[in-house]
Length: 156
Image (cartoon, rainbow, N blue to C red; front, side, top):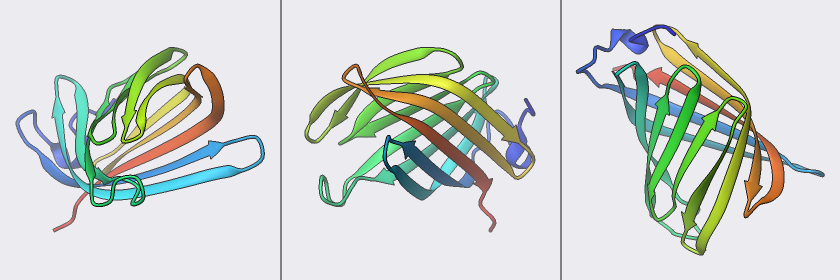
């Protein structure tokens, strides 16, 4: 893992970044795509990359509500924590399954992810994380999913 990428951030520095998230669910008959682009903050601490950003909730379920997201990236594991109207803590670890609660404005769900692959590419200007995983909701298989996160230094 290339330490302190994204413009050589030191342990005590934060950088403004652009976070681009593209997700795809492969359901039996159709594919469902999502894409989110947000400004965020990046820092490197204790051998892990941290990215903090806000995500707007779906307009119908909670208009004008945001969720604070924290992405923690290490060599073999990626964690995504969301706090606010929709709260969750998803752990992606190669070859392992993790169950987590997902709180929504409509109630709680039990979310399971079984990570099939984690690919992390780092250089001076960006970090790209690609996850492929199986998704369960309330212990029922839902779909195969692909999530690609691109973190780039914000140019000033």
